[in-house]
Amino acid sequence: MIYLDYQATTPVAPEVAKEMAPWIEDKFANPHSPSKWGHEAAAAIEVARGQVDAAIGLKGGSVAFTGSATEAINWALKGTVEKARADGKEPQRNRIVTIATEHAAVLDTCEWLAGQGIDLTIVPVDAGGRLDLELLERELDERVLLVAVMMINNEIGVTHPITEIAKLAHECGALMLCDAVQALGRLDICTGPDLVAVSAHKIHGPKGVGALWMRKGAEPAPLIHGGGQERGLRSGTLSPALCVGFGAAAKLGAERCNRDYDHVQKLWAAAVHALGPGWTINGSTSHRYKGNLNVRRQGVDGARLIADLRDVAFSLGSACASGSGRPSHVLRAIGLDYRQARSSVRLGFGRYTKQAELVDACKRIADAAVRQEMLDA
Ligand code: PLP
Image 1 (tube, protein in one colour):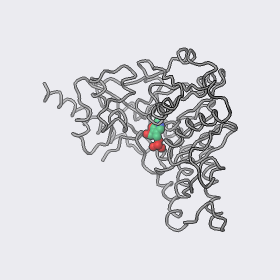
Image 2 (tube, protein in one colour):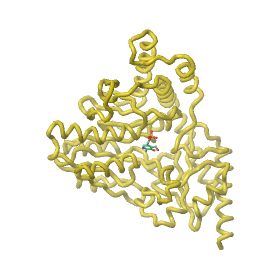
Image 3 (cartoon, rainbow, N blue to C red):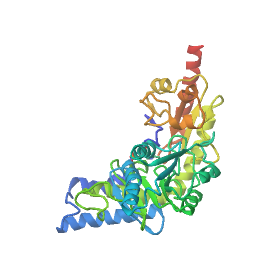
Image 4 (cartoon, rainbow, N blue to C red):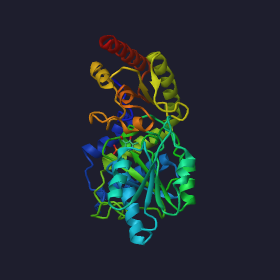
């Protein structure tokens, strides 16, 4: 099996599995209980919190663990609205501004909030998947409560100028949420946002744990009520194993960031070369994380390519769009028509991808595409 679906999830690093093992096998204490064992688990979680915080690398805030980045994003959006309502800032500030290529965790939550009376503005992107800052600026005024823009797009790898966007948001008195799920451990997290959502399983950590970094004073109202864990902001017993795994993955990611980045640059060049002519890259190539190669070829059916090559794991536009039958909203947002979107596949690679296997997979994908063309001719 050649695994080329790094945007969907990443293999757990051996170092991470090793750190987690004692917390699965022997150390079962509740980290919120006052026993000696409980204290030991709580201390391990605090070390992990520090590691995640250090990997995010922003000053003046703190990290709360969640069950996923989806939860962190829901909390950031709904909790910020809830807090504004409680503080009496809403209805004056009742608008959320986001962009057309955000992950469903942001877009669907925003749509839900729109159903609850929030005014929602979705700013389009250009053909490269980039946001025009002037277009964004035109939407920003004293009615805006929150601006939500991701750092690296999960479907096409395109990056956004988060520091500039945060500055524009702050100039109109709004907060800024950045979905940095695909960015953590891959690029330095841009300074500026007030809220940052991250996820362990995208950085060689375990599934089932995410985090929200919150600038002091920008903490959203709680979404999950109960035992008051996470400083009363997010209730629920934390899993020491998952938190320790996240911390270890974050530490490793920060240590290996440059090495992984260089590796990915080489892999990208090799993959583009191996695919050969006839393919068009979806999304900007200059403002892009190169571990994401989203390509299309006229006349190809991406779903059939995936079915034809059972021992190569790759994806349609996104894991969420795959299987739903719906063409990816990101590919549609950059102007692709239905057929172009259907002829697109996403190859995602990273730390553990070997160049030879990637080249082999790309050649097989290219051959399978040519076979499809011949059969359909
Ligand atoms: N945001 C982006 C950009 C993602 O790629 C993903 C996962 O696909 C998420 C959010 C959701 O992360 P999680 O799987 O931790 O809920």
